[in-house]
Figure 1: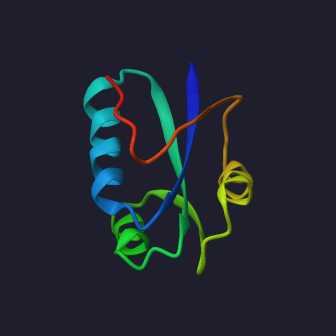
Figure 2: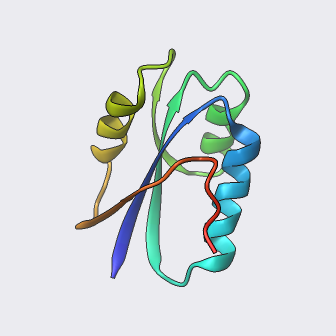
Length: 90
């Protein structure tokens, strides 16, 4: 089964990296990760571009609901998981 994991983030790169590593090391499921980057002045946008992470972007914080809707627009699977950038997946 394939999953799309959609994640809003707002200048939280340190935790986002921790979150992404938890999925990389602890998941055996096929998945795509889609971020919505709010502002990204902490380097999050550059990180996503450098690492070929699917994402949407707004130059200011547009809020949680709008962020999730924008990220959802890039999903390619029937199963969607909503997560936060400060979560850790075991």
